[in-house]
Image (tube, rainbow, N blue to C red):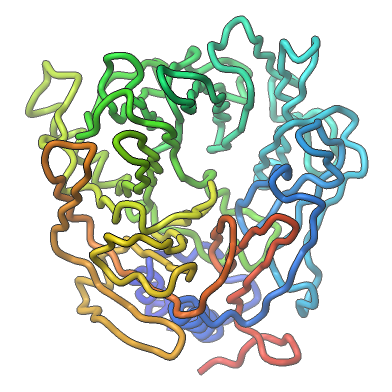
Length: 477
């Protein structure tokens, strides 16, 4: 039975991490129920959480836990926050949670890694001309003994962009992603910057990088985005976490100086030792993970689109190109891109939050577009995109259910835009689970068994954990 469990998990894009108190038969039934509920958009429970204004909340989603600032007033620093397990409020077991009424400092952002009992807090000081990145314990909000120093300092004079600073955890690394909106020629545009440091060693890994955004590919490589400022091409880059240098660039078929906003949608590293019982049972299979680039272009008209990149295929392509073309450090789109990406329809899918990816999956919403060439369901519906090729190779087909329509995309598609001189082909296979219910959310976020949907004053949490009316575990099939 355990072999059958591992095979089905692998087909769905996951690895068995910990069986907990379940037998193999119980866990197999549980995982089948989650998959079935997700793929038919039938949550087993939903609840709402109120907020004075969700636009000003800072939050993080990782390892089945949701951290969120509380009692924040607009964009002022906050001193209180919660981390809670993503299970229904009346779950049939203790819901893990941690609450801080006073963090003892004025905080502007945070991250956490429960496997290392690590809480990362970003504090403004020196009249906002400096930031301290504190390494605290989740269990006691005291200096983390695993860190070689209690905090790391960053100063405005060392960073070309300073306005906002968001953190991203990945094992021993913490990335700081800076952003600001500024005038560029005739319009405003988002400008970014990033740096990475090792929180255990307490040393910088990279210098300040003039990039739009940064995410992690592995313990050896970071992925960066160049938005085409000046005469530089719009491109991805790969940054060594050994040398701290951007070693190679991967050009995109987009004009420079047209990008209004460019960001990477990704997920923190998966710790695998979460106190959330439900989260530590399985983990995403690394070869199936994705990163998504979210672009908004301007002139001759506003246009938004998503580029999905398979991390494993990208790294394989990178190693192949290094061997074939050892003297090159910049590759054209035709050399690297069509087989490892999927360009999603222009201005048809949107509202993806910064934590809208999990493993091979991504949660989006459809928007109205009069020139749409594909039916993505009613305007405002939820759509789950799964870039795991294994079910497609196993013969997955288009399906129709009461609440959801499934469409399999396994051939090349052509992306055309007023901004580019020729069409762009891409071929990363995926399945689209297109919900039929119209909803109205400002953005959406994804975890293994949960969707978090944000409106101005409310979060709607949709749980797909298997449970009956009394909240007990499901019986094995």
